[in-house]
Length: 289
Length: 178
Image 1 (cartoon, chains in turn yellow, cyan):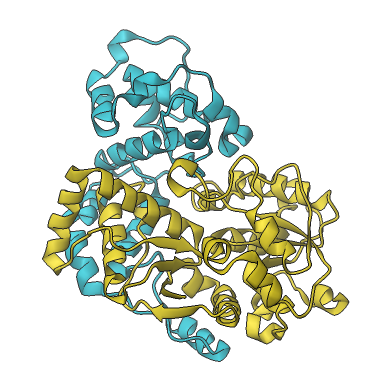
Image 2 (cartoon, helix red, strand yellow):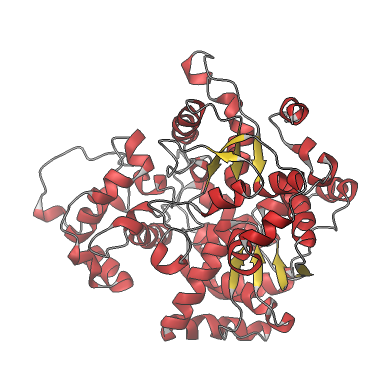
């Protein structure tokens, strides 16, 4: 199994532990990565200001993987969601495709739809398979964890075709393959609030607080994410949740990238998984394992 | 800047058919299928915590051409783009994509939220939403990761020149109170 690795923005610039742990765990599963050296931001954040610019960036990114002759792999659901949706739109809308290709011709590139996009979890479920993941586990973890799915991994489902947004369960099965118990919680489907952080911080933190409060009622020992952006929001901003309530919050739970959980179960050392990069300390929990 | 709907009376002289037609032209006639069931607002994480924000009201305002309530409102920038509304809309209206279209139109009028201006400029200049600082590569080196894959800035500059996105952002009005 070979994929062109699309780094995006948040993972390589802010969540290196995700990349390190992902590279290690998928190597153990026999997955090979080819580095994409010319790609940029997927285009998601340009979409709000100009859909054409956003489509051009997405199409250009897809073109950079053409010579690799393999699918593109992302660690960020927003990247995979955006690239997948723009790819579908370009294939279905000849007018947009012509506009985009007219611009891409200035850099001698052309979108032809030949490259497909996969998020890490989709690759793990569809190409590697749960049984192979289970077989790679040497140290079942025995923790209780709350999974956070993230919105762009599956919504809108008519374009992304992954899991069921009304009853998501695929991350649960990936987590349970490591010997961890997943808790169900009332706000499992709620957005974490991260995309609002730059627009309205108070509102963003209110959404996060509702999410974390719901998780804290379950007795979960940690939170697991598959999105670098959601991860930053949980990991960096949980400590601030009490601020607008006179400092009375609830204790911050450790937040793991899924690949850190799988890596621990595969027997990797914390250093191989960047576990000491996590902002909410994980030492206490690691010592109980 | 209008920040909330201040009147329950819709005045015909305030409607802007051109705006309504432009949204429909950009987004298709699906907008007319909305029967105001409110599934979008009921599913919206932002509406849940801010009563002024309602995707349902944004869609209705767009159909009626009430541009003042959407194009010139800060509220459209509160959408978190979670796509819950688009997932659940029983009429296929795809509210999050209609809001995206309205945001693009507002940007052309110079009414764009500063956060998105900063993100877009960073992408046009550095190819990513942040500049790749040397410290990041040092950290990656310590962790045994390869250097951040370089972006082809020449190519990014060429395509961004062609879409004129920087000119679009520079046309933003003097209103910096956002």
